[in-house]
Length: 288
Image (cartoon, rainbow, N blue to C red; front, side, top):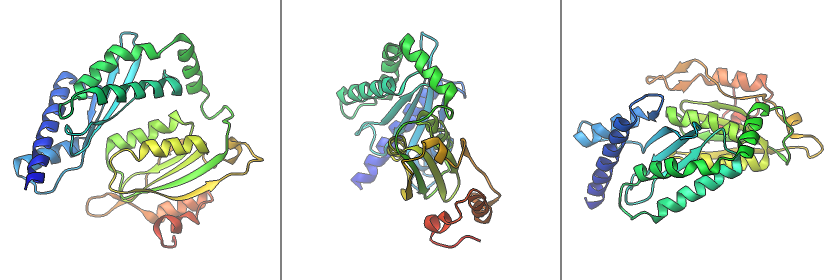
C-alpha cells in the first residue's frame, strides 16, 4: 500500500510540475509534452482509470540570449522526484564534443541538488544561464558545416548496421527524437512506428553504438538489438549504406486501435531494399 501511495504522490507532483511548465511556456512549438501520457496520468489520479500511466516526458525549446536554440528533453521516472529526471540538451549549432560537455555538466548540476526536490525548472534555468559558454565561433562554423554536408562527407571508422525491435513506438516525442538524433550521429536507415516498432541504423560502428545507448535510456516497454551486421573494412562507410537518408516509414494501419502497420507491406519494403531475410530475424516468422 505504501508503494502505491508513493507512486500517487510522485505522479501528482510530476503532473503539477508539467502543468506549471506549460503555463510558463504556453506556445505549442515551444513546449511539447506527450499529451496521451499526461491525460492518462490525470485520469489515474482522478480515479477515472485504474491503469498505471506511462512515464511523462516533454521537449522544451530554449532560446538563449545569443539567439541559438537548445532543445531540452526530459523524461520523468515513476520515482521522480525521489530520483533524478533523465535530461538531455541538444543543439544543431553545437559540435558533438561541446554537446557532451554541456550534458555532463548538466548531470553534475542535477546530482548536486537536494534529493527529493523538484528539479526540472532549476535544470532549465541552469541551461538558460550556462549553455551559451559552450558555443564558440569555431564550433558554430564546424557544426554548421557538419549539418550542411551530412551524408556527403566521408565518415571514418568501421561500418555497422543495427536492427532494433521495440514493443511499440507510439510517443510523438520519441518518434521525433529517433529522427533528430540520427542526424547527430550521421546515420541512415529508417524508423517504423506502431506496434511493434522497428529501427534500422547504418553508419560508423561507434556512432551506431552511441545512438543506441542514448536511445535505450528512454522509457521503453521493450527495446532490443535483434541483429547486427558489420561491414567490409576494404570499403568506405558510405559505399556500404543501403539507405541514403534516415526517415520514418508508414504503411496501411490495422487493428482496433489502428496501431499495427501492415506487415505484408513492410516485408515487401524490406525485400525491395534487399533485406527480406531480416523479417524472420525480427519477428520469428517468414515474411509473405
